[in-house]
Structure formats: C-alpha cells, structure tokens
View 1 (tube, helix red, strand yellow):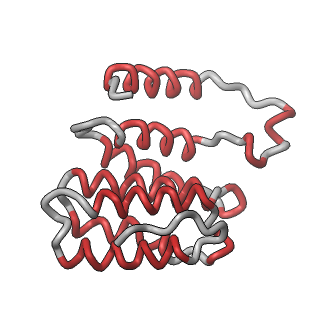
View 2: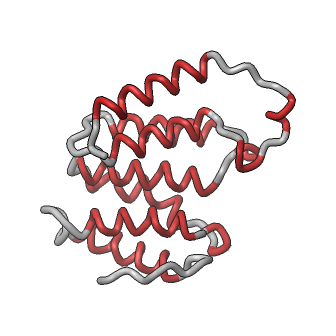
Length: 165
C-alpha cells in the first residue's frame, strides 16, 4: 500500500518472468486461469494508479487498453478489459484530463447488463468516486459522467450497492 518502489519492482519482475515462460499442455485449458499479456499490463497499471502521484499510470493503463484491443475476440476477457478502461479513466482524472475520461469509460458504459458483474460495477464506482472529489467535481463533464455511472451501476447484473449522488 503506497510503496511505489515495491510496485515498480514487482511490475519489472513480472515482465522478466513473462519473457521466460514456456507454454505447456496446461495452457490449452484456458479460461479464468489464463493470464495473458493484456491482463498483466492491466494489473500493473491498476497497481500504479492506486499510488499517489504515479506519473506513468496513464501510460501503463493506455498500454493495457491497447493490448486488449489487439487481442483476438476469442481471447478477450470483457471484465478485465473494462477494468483496464476504468484504470485509464482514473489515471486521466488524476492527471486532470477530464476530456479523455469519457473516451476511456464509454466502452464500459456500453456493456450489456449481463456483462456487468460486481467487479465491473465496483470499478465503475471507483471512477464515480474520483469524479466526485477534487477541483473537477463541479465541472459539467464530471457531473454528466457521474450520472451515467450511477445508471450503469444501478442496472448492473449483480446489483451492487447504489451510488450516492
């Protein structure tokens, strides 16, 4: 928690380990235990965006989103891709770039109800919370996105607790 050096070291170690991975017959099973490069980038970006003042969180999140976009549909994980997009939105909020938040979060808001499990709704709530504080909270784009996020979480598949206006 808050250990920027530890996060950087862990992300660097993960990159090195990925370079040395030799696929085996268990990799053909796929599913939830598949840990592709896009997921690795997403997890690293999420760790960075949670650090105060992480300057490279936006770049890391953009890399994760780009990796998901380049992944074949058959290998994409919609909930992790949504997570990567919410991390990108959080990084842009943290950098004060509200104009890029809508671009980052729009594909998440477009997910059908059956693709809105609790984890995706929780990620959306984090974006809502970030838009509710700081100097941008009264900006029209922030208010509009908060409203869309409230509607999104209210209609999620697992109906997590409602957002406070």
